[in-house]
Image (cartoon, rainbow, N blue to C red; front, side, top):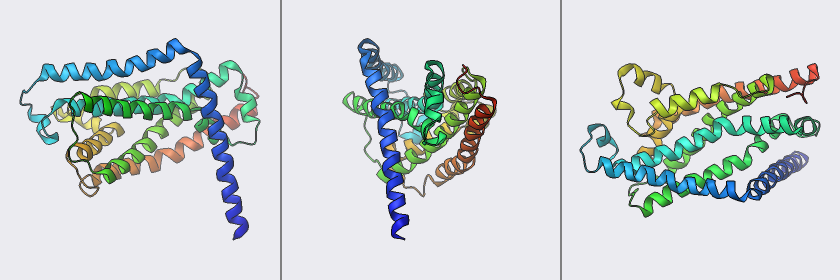
Length: 281
C-alpha cells in the first residue's frame, strides 16, 4: 500500500511538473509579444462595454423571456459572453497547441518523451485555459463595476456547473485536436459547434425566444445547459437539485464524449507513428 501511495504521489508530481513547464513556456511566449498581449487585454474591456451598451439600448423594456432570469439583460448577457469565451478556448485550445507543434517541428520531439500523448495535448492547452479563466473573471468583475449584480449566488451550484461544463467543452476540443493530427490543417468541427452555440445556445438572448425547431437543436448543445445552470446559480441562487437536469445532461455528455475523445487522440497518434508522418504538416 505504501508503495502504491508513493507511486501515485510521484505520478502527480511528474504531471504537475510537465503541465507547469507547458504553462511557463506558453506564458513567456505570449507575453513576449507585447503589442499582441496588450491587444488581448483591450478586447476584454471592449467586450464588456459592448454588452453594457447593448443592455442600455434594451433599457428597462419588459422582455418576457428574460423574466425567468430576473429581467435584467446586462448580467444575463455578461454570463453568456463569459461562458462563450471559455467554450471557444475549449474547442480550439487543444487543436491550436497541436497545430503549432506540428508547424514548428516540436510535435515529434514531444511525442518521443516518456509523457503520454494525452498529457502532452492537455499541457499544450494549459496556458490557454488558464488565460481564459482569467478573462472570465475579468468579465464578471468588470460587469459588477458597471452595475451587474449577482445577489443570490449559490457557490456550490456554480462550482458544479463550471466543472461539468469544462469537462464537456474540453471533450469536444480534444476530438477537434484528433482531426488536426490526421488532417494536418484546421478542422471544421470546432467552428461549426462554436457558430451554432453563438446562434442557438442562448449566449445573447434566451433560447425561449427561438423557433421550436431551433430550440430543439439548442437542447443538444452543451453550452445551452451550461448557461441555463450557471445563470440559475448566479442570478437566482438555485441549488444543485433545482438545476439537476442541466447538470445531469452535462455529466452524461462528458461521460460519453471524453473517453471517445481520448481514444480518438491516442488512435490518431498511433496511426501517425505507424505511418511515420508525425513530423509532416
